[in-house]
Image 1 (cartoon, rainbow, N blue to C red):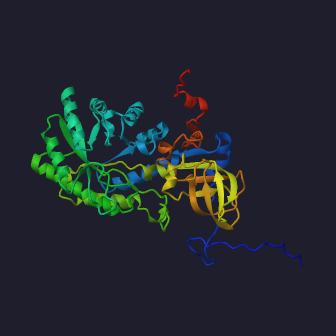
Image 2: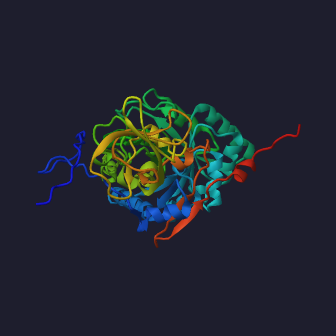
Image 3: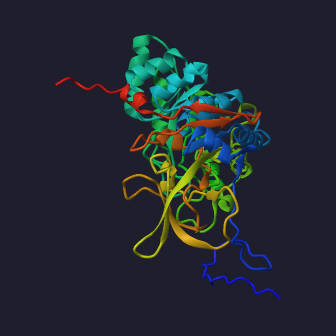
Length: 446
């Protein structure tokens, strides 16, 4: 009988997961391909790191959200949140699916116009709108969401100068039973400020009040919070009709739907705890349909969800640069993608996976980026197998905010690739190089 080869004993920390009859699993998920294209092939052709966006996932996620709401409420209109990901190719997909544009700056407004969005299909949000910004919006017949009284007074002045009417709504902050209460933006519901704003707008001859808007927060884990918010908007909707005999055209519940990412400090993964589109839709539609609003006068329901529509479609492909041990014995590794590319790593425990099966022996590890700064931590604690330098890793659910909040810091920003419905990759944003940055600089002669 042949003697078995010696294997040294290994002590492994038990990892969380759903147990089977053999105990807790330690096998790590792998991502070897995206929409049928091998990760290794993508990285050989487009470099490392590289962002990859799946058009198929975008359209499927949008279809799920649309079906959830349109089967429960008669009039629904999505407006793509530009700040979530304003790459032209991404925005164009959402517009092709029928989404309006929701913007928060003149830059985003102009970007939407450049992509062929009709001005009347642009919602202009945000607390910073100059007189020129307001003129731009008025001249394109956009929906201007007023954020504060100073903006309201400026808008009245601008409409008089232009001798034109402006289509407006007000943003409302309110107590939806969650913490923290977002009261930085808009007019408060509970203290009467929102009702005061409505009265002032109705007195202004050049303002046409057409909607009410609230955005209760970000990554909202409670669908019931939206039911409370919708009920309060419905109350204002009816109060406006009773006093002014005026029916508003829409209510806008904003965004804030959670994606399936896992927040830092969360006990359970986001895939298990985040509400579904069906749950959000059920809560919102129930509140509006069961309110005092007559069914024949129900407003259009606007939704500005961004994160939940795009997060799942984004991947960052990266390479292991080094393995180290900290002075406390913690295993660490360095990858070639840092927090300058992954802003969301500050609040998410991002999913990081190898592209092939590795050892079943895992060890709690820290994953650092390549930047010369101590806060460049992609995952501070993750159970991960030993990997060699040059190993490819895939970071999933990075489609939201990372490609708008990224920074050119120490390293160039990489290529962004879109895989279309035919499984063909396209560069939708080229990797930066020295010349592209120096084009914006001027060096005075001395």
